Image 1: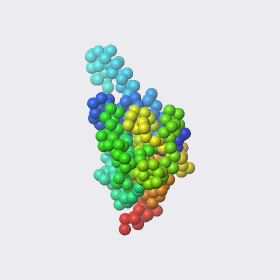
Image 2: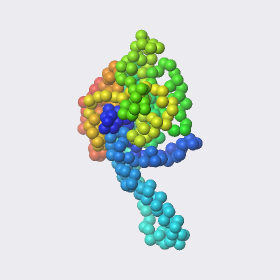
Image 3: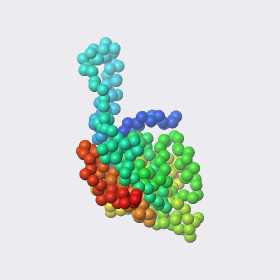
Image 4: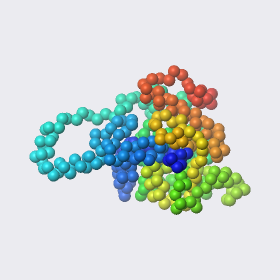
Amino acid sequence: MLECAAYPATTLEPDYTMNDTTEPAGETAGPSSDDMPEADTVDGLYHPPATEPYQDPDTGPSDDSFAEAAEGSFAEAAEGSSAEAAADQARPARREFKARGSTVTRCDTCRLPALNCLCPYRVEAESLARFWLITHPLEHLKPTNTGRLIADVLPSTEVFTWYRTAPDERLLELLADERFAPFVIFPDDQPDYADRVVGMQAVRDAIDPAVGNGARIPVFIILDGTWRQARRIFRRSSYLDGLPVLPLATERETRYRLRKPASKAHLCTAEVAAELLRQAGDGDAGQVLDDYFDAFNDSYGASRRHSRLPGPTPAMERLLARRT
């Protein structure tokens, strides 16, 4: 989702995972300049500047920055094969790289450490509004991503992987379906699309059978990636150009503790979705998602400390009561 200092209520999750995905023809595989770590992340979290060695908060620093790797390759080419051979002899052998957390046993379903599995607290809810997540490829493998919590609670949620030159065909079909009234969740801080900006009343009007073309299903489209990736998706996806833009206004403060936000006003993806549900009139579904997010937050936090939660938290107890 989306957020920044000027737009604190809409968040996307930061990207820290290198791209292992084979992208369709025409799209450059691997991280582009838009995918490099950045300081203004969509969730308000700090990303090291591109001039520093890249460091993943979960896996630790990489061996070299992109700049160092490129610089080293040019230097070796200039020195020639003899200098390269001498350098190889002088350089100590590297140990096998193992990411931090690589030895943790995780649940195959919720992807949390098995020590504090989230599955017992998974509860589905119903809502009139739906969510379509357009997700950057790098987001899928990140275990702290909260966008997937939305799909756990609301089975109607659709998740699409974004590629600049290959739009998802199903997404295009859904956008053309007259049953839906899609809204792109994005800040209203640029004048070139000011005519597309709407408020929550537009969502309520879409539901009202007496307004416009009759009752339609409101859909919140969330761009899931870093701020730079989200802007890129927004600007380079022509199929989004004609859609209304809905900025989220809220006084809510974040409860996300797995990463330190730049401001308490910077909400994570699941928190944004819960607030959208409440403002759209789906308060019960918003509460379920909020409780599920809190259970995720507490479970993952305890696992990072290598400890088991002593018992269900209040949010977990509310979820367990809904399962009975």
